[in-house]
Every structure is written in C-alpha cells, then in structure tokens.
View 1 (cartoon, rainbow over the protein chains, first blue to last red):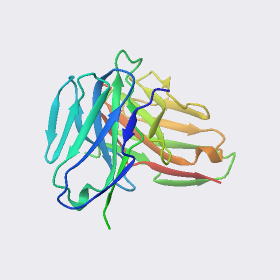
View 2: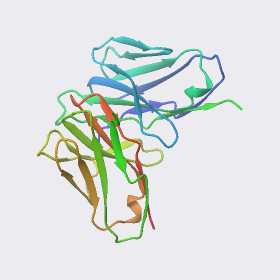
View 3: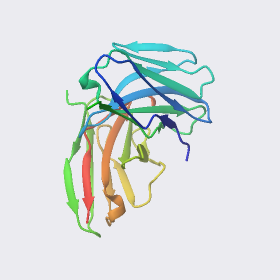
Length: 113
Length: 111
C-alpha cells in the first residue's frame, strides 16, 4: 500500500534543543497531520495542514505542508522532557477513495542520557 | 465528555478463540475507524465506516469483521484469533475524514 517515509526513525533530545523531523512520499496529499503518542496511550492530534506551503504553529511546535504536496516537516523548539514520545505524520491522499489516512512509521523522540 | 472510549483495555486470547472489541464516541462524528499498531509499522487501517450504515475494508481486513451498531458505536470482531493478530488496536473517529481522534487502545495478546 501507499507509504509515508518518516525520518529519522529515532532521535535523542537534550533539554533546550530545537529538533526537526520530516515525512515524505512519492504521492500527492491533500492534508497533512502530525500526531504524538505517549507510552500506553492513543495518538493525539498536534497540528493539521490543509494548503501547500502552509506553516502552522501550536505552542513550541511548527509544521509545514511542503509546496510539492509530497512532504511535511515538524519542528519542536526548546525541547522539554515531556516532548519524549512517538511522533507520527499522516496524510490524506489527493483523490483518495473514502475518508482514509495513511500513516508514517513514526519518529521516536528520546532524552539524551 | 469522554471522547472516544474502548473496551477492554487488555485481553489475552488463545488461538482460535473469538472476541469483540468495542468502541464508542460521544463526539457526534460520522466516520469511525479501526487500526492496528505493530512495532515499527505505524498504524494500519483494518476497517472503517464513513457513516452510519456503511462499512468498508481498509489495508489489512483479513481475519476481522466490523459492525457499525449506530452513530456512536463501532465494534471489531475476531472470529478465530491467531498469534499474528497480537497487536494494539485503536479506534478513531472523524467528522470530515481528515482530522481523526483516537481512543486509548486495546492491547491484545493471542497465545
């Protein structure tokens, strides 16, 4: 099936650092979404993007809808310990059948020892 | 306002046993979804219901059946559980099909 390639697969953060992750595909998407999942919980929606080139912030999080409509980026500024978790990108394909999302494999954010 | 609730939270089954996972929402959303999450695989869509009275297969429907009981409830049934169905199952709802809201999950182990 359709895949979203999310990178990096994992990263270590130090408090105060800015971090970035991205999601790419060979197909065009209408919508990009970013979710965060804490251990033992369901994914929680962080940011939704609807237009190519759109830049949207939610507190210390900023996400962008790539102008090619085939990628998206998420930045976290000034990391804090509670940023640890798994971040998923998801997209709704252009002319998708049904109201379905495609998910990336996730970026696991860990704290530097 | 509970949002999306799932029962049970945990379940252990033996191969061949059957069970139904329940999902209910109080968000008045039209669309509901069942996903499974395996390590390193992200979320994969099993079945979805775009509106009350309709259901459609997702990416990995084999071994599962669903029922959209009413606008609030969407159940997932495993008729004959297999070890390959060991996973975490999430229900999600949506009003427009793009922003989906997830329940807390059911952790299923099949031995």
